[in-house]
Length: 103
Length: 244
Image (cartoon, rainbow over all chains, first blue to last red; front, side):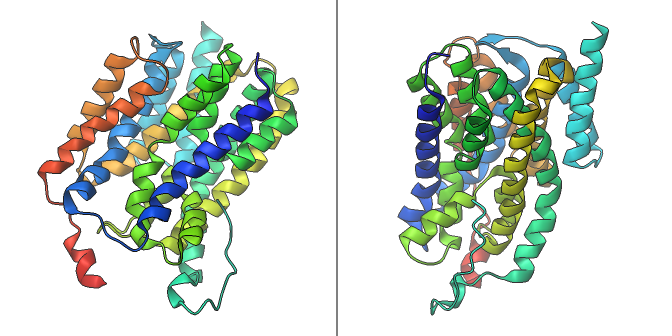
């Protein structure tokens, strides 16, 4: 690692706090125009789907489908069938670890 | 973050914390908080394995408290990347908090400073659960759900950082499968009402296509373009207007 972790910690903390504060500081007490509200309501599913995809299908900027993809799929199945998030992540990690032990 | 506000008697009853709602938030946040233990423990172990000291790993969780930004920036610096790239990746990962904060803003009382502070309580699960479905948010519920998650995020990182040496190779434990699963569960929660399925599919496709050509973090940010489909429909915000 060629950077000072403390510099990273401070910089990421400042950036994160600023992003989280921006909307509430600028917009408190006012409602958004309907078209903007419609777009914003759909941002969460779009970004979450993208985070899942980049989490399971990429490694170092390339397409890569590893054993963790199978684990995530197993965890997702558990959640879809009504399991809690805790059970889902335990199943995901356990499945991945099991597959890696076999290969 | 989990600032349990005891600021009372400010003259505005809207700034008081609704205690039953706060407790409901604590309860609703508990499953996510328990999952956070595993998630943050994996962060602590990976950070120490990558060259952070244990106090640095714990400090990052304490002051950043944003999992995707922490994992993204950590993976860049441990791969030899620079500070600028790591911070930009963290900012991209956190960019989703900008619209989340904008949507939340009308539900936050008080002046700009207070709203800015309470806006720090936005994390994915709390934000999604605190939405009333009419465009407004239960702020006390949000604060409660985040407080318990902040606690376990801190404790888990501490445990992971201190236990890193004992665990050895974290890859063997499948810890890297935990984070995408966390996002997948939140996504399933979002899609339960049937809304947003097409948008989620489009966002996933955009991200997938950009993985080999764009820098880390950009595929996720670009997927937000799919949400422009929301321009075509009328959001269910009129009910909230009547209530006020």
